[in-house]
Length: 391
Ligand code: LMR
Image (spheres, helix red, strand yellow):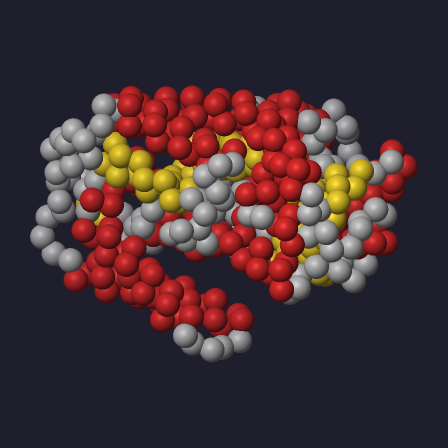
């Protein structure tokens, strides 16, 4: 690996704390923050407290531990070596997101002529869903691609609009939204939270799985479903009379296996690569929702990159996005074929009447969540989809 001497640059943590300097995680301070974050997490996990208090304490411990570690480090940052971009994600490498992340690594390293090294950590090996966003804001990792459904806890609720049931008839319609003014406006919301949005990446359309055959809306009554941390998805399952339970992606397989939850919704590629099909008797082809990602970077890290490096990383991101989004549908088709081949899950196809009944049952969600994600945004998106307002 070619190394270059890089001028140290000021880098602030997202809490405005002016301590990070240097080039990504080669900076010992950044490493300390990463370590402190994990120490804080472990310390927190040993504390038993009610859920709300636990989450509150967790944040306090993480911030405190990161602050102590940062103050303990003195002297100039390590200035030699490439700029490291740690890219953490929660899915398998062999998925639309995993492959796009690997493509970004390949291209960013090539276009920057080795000035940048991208370390991709798949499968929640570094952080789980919620922690990874906190770690990004702290500067412990530089890049992530959380799903649209996972930004609510940061205070940005608008991306949850993409969770509205039966919103998108196809990926072309989605592109009209993400590549147009609505998509651009949504990305700007990230800036206030210490993040810069770089791209929209696909996974694909969601299907329902359970140990019970799910055909009509009443079949969902009383079943427990694992969900991502989106209030729109929460409303969707409540509308069906089901009991939604927010859970990190890395915990879903075990929760299904042990019966902590009865079912879940996901794309074929996620179902297959997490082996959920081995612990779910039925999968119903609903295509009722979409999973896509916002690629985000720590804003101060990104703004502090030398302009030529940033421009080459942007070029790499653009091409990785085209690559990933160009093959996401095929990835999901292939995963479905594998699930069928494995033969452990019965694939249930709905008749047009059954499909219509599911759509109708979920429509109240649009009104239920209007005040959360914004009626104006919902209307704007619906206009792009050509559907007009839903009453
Ligand atoms: C999920 O949590 O089900 C998905 O968002 C995981 C992912 O990143 O595709």
